[in-house]
Structure formats: structure tokens, C-alpha cells
Image 1 (cartoon, rainbow, N blue to C red):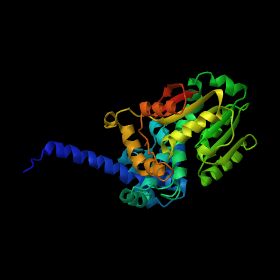
Image 2 (tube, rainbow, N blue to C red; image 1 turned 45 degrees about the vertical axis):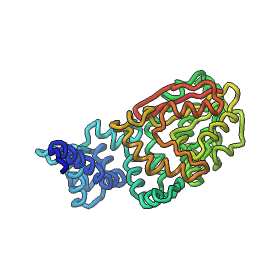
Image 3 (cartoon, helix red, strand yellow; image 1 turned 90 degrees about the vertical axis):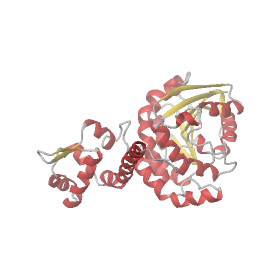
Length: 354
């Protein structure tokens, strides 16, 4: 008969209560973002429930329950003496300051998107087939773009591009840049705004993403010198790029090795390829226990692996492939110099040169 260790069981149940509390918070937090409740607390707080409801034009009874839910989550503060709710500066970084590196509206949207996509991914478990990008739920690509945007806003120009060997002067003088797997265009437009002498083109195989990217380019007044095209990575016809970038997408490709060989052809002889990928150890066992890897493995199960398996080859690297495996892939494609140029809590930046 199996003996139950009640202390271990209690610890596991306690962990599960915390995890389920976080899961239960997803819809209420999304309501707070979408209806401006966090923003109102940030701009006008501390506020009583009646004032918060008045500021947002929402029903007071709902607002009261929402506010106590967020206070119980630890996402907003509550002062029992004054009966007012507020956002601390740290809470505001997560829930109200949109250009903060830890602004997480997109993360909650992504969590909801993964739940919405569960039936299709669950069916794929039985068949081994993939689920094409954008087909698992309503607007997965919107959620993914929003999830990565804060990191890109705070890292691409400030840290990642300067870490590349000799790339910054080229961009300042005028370089030709391809952003492959550009999605809705956040990464492309951030680079274009920072380096007005350079030209940029974003490529993605997902037509709705490219439609969004073109709309963003127009809204930012950059449509005259940034273009976006719907085309698979291996079918890009243009050549002689000084820089190719890929942000969190190489592992999603069905044929990342074929893509790497094609990128080698796109570059000038002295060109550079910047590959931003999720941070991961080389050994899967070393990722277990990491809160970041926990996020990435779950997202990889629901998004990255199904996306890759829906394409030709379907290598399904997954979001935790690790530097060694990626380096082997790049060197096999003909890149002679590969190094880790930079890293952060969520990403590693590899530089590949011909």
C-alpha cells in the first residue's frame, strides 16, 4: 500500500491553490485591462469603489467585486481604514505603464488564447498533426505580439543591436534590413524609428499579421520607408541584406534548417543574422524548476510545437531548444561564426556571421 506523506501533500495542495488562483485571475485581470480599471487607479488613485466606478463609467457592484479580487490577488493595494484601492509603483509597472519591460497585458491575453485553442491542440495530440499559426483561436497572433512588445521596446535598440559586432554603425549610416517572422511588425517598426537612414522590410507567412503590420506602419508614419510582405521565409527573393533579424520565431518554423540555409543566401558577405530565442538551458532537466521555462514549456506545448508540426518538415524545435542545438543548426547552414551576443531574463540573442 502506498504511504502518503501528508507534509508533501499539503505543500503540493498549497502550490496548486496558488496556481489555480493565478489561473482564475486571468479573466478578471483582462477585464481590468480592457475596461480601464487599472489605468484609472494609476491616474486617479487611491479611489473608493464608488469613485472608481464613476471614473470608468462601470456598474459599482461589479467594480467592487473586481477590486477585492485584485486585492486578494496582490495586484492592487487596499487600505481598510480609508476603504480605498490603489496601485503601487511596482504594480503600475505590470498593469498600467504600457512601455514598462514588465507590462503584462499581453501575457494574460496569451493565457486566454491558449485556453481557447485547447480543443484543436488536444485533437492534435491524438493525430500527431499540427495546428496552423492563427487557427487555434481567434487572435493568437495579436496576443503574441502584445506579449513580446514590452521586451522589444526595452531591449532591441537599447541592448540587443548594440551587442552585435559592427552592426550599429551600419544602421546609423544606412543599412538594408530584413525582419523575418515579423508578425504584426512591432520589432520592425522599433528598429525603423531608431535608424531613419536604414531601410526595413518585414516578412511573415501569416497574411493577417502582415495586414496589421502595414496598419501599424501607416499609423506610425513609417509606411514610406518600411514595407511588409506576406511570404514564407524560404521564399524571400530579395538579397544583399546587411542585417537579418528573427525575433522569437525560428523555433516555430517547420523547417528551421532550410530557413537558416536560405538566410545565408540573403546576406551580404559581411552581413549579420540576429536570432532572438527564448532563454533556455541545453539540458531539458536543467530547465525544470525555472519559472521562465515553465511559461515557455506550456506555451510551446500549446503554440510553438503545433505551429511547427503544421508546416513542411515539422521539426518542432520547441521554445526551449537551447543554445547548443541552435548553434549546431546555424553552423550546419554555413555560418562560421556563432556566438551569444546578449541575454536577458526571457531571451538569448545569438549572432551568426557567414
